[in-house]
Each structure stands twice: as structure tokens, then as C-alpha cells.
Amino acid sequence: MEGIERAIRNAFAKGDAANPATRQRIYESAWSAHEHALAANTSLSDAQKAQRRDRLKATISRIESEFRPARPAAPAAASRARVEPALGGVEVQNGAAPAKAASPAEGPALDRDDVRTARKKKHRDADFGFEGGAPRRDVAKKPRSPFMSYVLPGLILLVFALMGWSLYNSFTDVMNPSRSTALLNGAPAREGEDAAGGKWINIFNPSEPTRISVTGSATAQIAGQGSVGFARVKSPGADDEIIFDVGEGILREIAGKKATFDIIAKSDDGQPTQMSVSCDFGAMGDCGRKRYDVTDARSDFLFDVTFPEGQRATGAGTITINSDVSGAGKAIDIYAIRVSVAQ
Picture 1 (cartoon, rainbow, N blue to C red):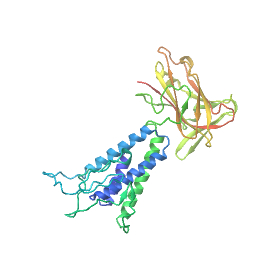
Picture 2: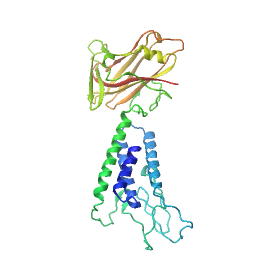
Picture 3: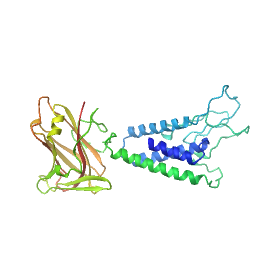
């Protein structure tokens, strides 16, 4: 949330941060941009989206607490009206309780002590000119203030920060990647779950093309999109396979343990395909033959292998992939192959 917090504070620095209405408008813009970013990132599960909403609410609440004034020694008179704005557009009348609290998906509410009534002037209705985040039709449109010229760049920066943050979480290996699109055949790991307490060991990445070999008419070429590289592999027939070397040092490290293998891939040209995966770890055994449905969404395909104690690596191993078991010759893009062992 560091990028979001920095964007909010930059918007405060360019506007009237002491004004609760200004802060609320910036919070709502941040929340709306965050929701758009979550909707655009189809690789996230509902639980992960809820977790990120909670983190954003906690960040907004922490920032808002810095503007909370010291509470008076004696409580204000019951007759004094107060305005209680909440993200999501809830209206509060004088002396009346809020009709409904904002739901978690609509954003966190501001502290009710942050906004007080104007100087000795009673308002029949507290109205900030918005309902559910949209402008009220019954409120006259005010001319654009020069102050918006300073806030607008900050909001644009916030939107780009949220988009970058979402893309970073989709492509980094540090965060827990979503596996909801990976249809695993016999995969022992649950979707969205990394090996507990393990560290990933790279078996293949696009910067190491010497680890790839092919049989028959299969092809493999290193390509890239922007700064992201991948190996585009293609199997025209059932016997045309792509082989990835697993170093002897890696096998020694996972010997006698339960290992989770992860193939990060997607189909090429938007055409779904079904790939097959098999392994040969020499004296340590194999992983059987597995099939995975691969779509054009970059996904993680997992399988577990338990290596019995006492077995030791006597040489290097291999992981063999056929990009299209139907024989139609559809290609897939391999971004990485890695392994992790449970601690």
C-alpha cells in the first residue's frame, strides 16, 4: 500500500488537506481507482480482492487519524448538529442517526469527529453533493476551482500507481499468485496456495535458453513482450516434445523431501490448448504424466512430488512438455519453471 499512501499524501499536499470534504473526495477517488484495478485484474480470487480492500481501508483510516483533533474535555451539547460523511454517499440529518452504515466494499467511513457544523448556523440537511459516489442532481454545479488544477495531477498519479501495483502483484514471484485459471489434473496443491514456508528454486527462466532441448518437429524460441520474457514452445505432433533440464544440484536439494513444482505459462494467440507434463528424475523417480488446460491468461500449474528418504540424485533430471496433446500444434508461452520444498 506504499504507492497508494504516497499518492494520497501527494494529493493532500496539493490541496486543502485540512478540509474534511477535500480529504473525503480524495479517499473516494482512491477507493474507486482501487476497485477499477481489482476488476481489471481477473487473476485475483475474491478472497484476495477482499484482503486488498481491507488493507486499503486500514491505510485510509491510519492517514485520517493524523487529522483527528483532540477531543474536548466536555461532550458537545446534544442539540448541536454534526455532519457525518461516509464513503459511499450516506446522508445524515440533524439529530438523526445514519440510516445505514457503509458496507466494506464501499469504503471505510471517516471518523465522525473530523467534521463539525459551521459557525452557529443550523442546517436542516447535511449534504456534500454526492450519493453513492455520484454527483447529486439537485445541487447546483459549481464553477471549476483553480484548486482542481493541482488535485487532478495527484489523482492521475494515484490511478497509475494503483495500476502499476496491480500489475506488479500479478507478475512478481514474491506475492502469492492466483491459480484460479489453472485446471489441474490430479494436482495435489490447492488453487492459490504456495508451498508452505518454502523458497522457490528456479529450474528455468527465459535468460537460460541452454536448458531447453526439443525432439522431433517441436520448436522452442525465446521471445518477449515489453520487459517480460518467455519461451514459446510448440509441439506439432504427439511425439514432438520440449525438454527442460533439471540440474543435479537442484535434485540434491529436494531429495528426501516433498517438493512442489510450478510451471508458469499461458496459451499463444488466445487459443486454449491442453498440455502434458512428465518428469524423469533418474534414481529419484518421476512425476507421472499430467495434463493441464491452458488458456490465454498467465497461470501457475502445480504438481507435488514426494521423494522418499534415502534416495539421492545420481545425475541431472528433465521435465518434458507437449504443448498440444490433440496434435493440432498449438503453442504455449513458458515464463518460468520452479520448485519449492516444504520446510
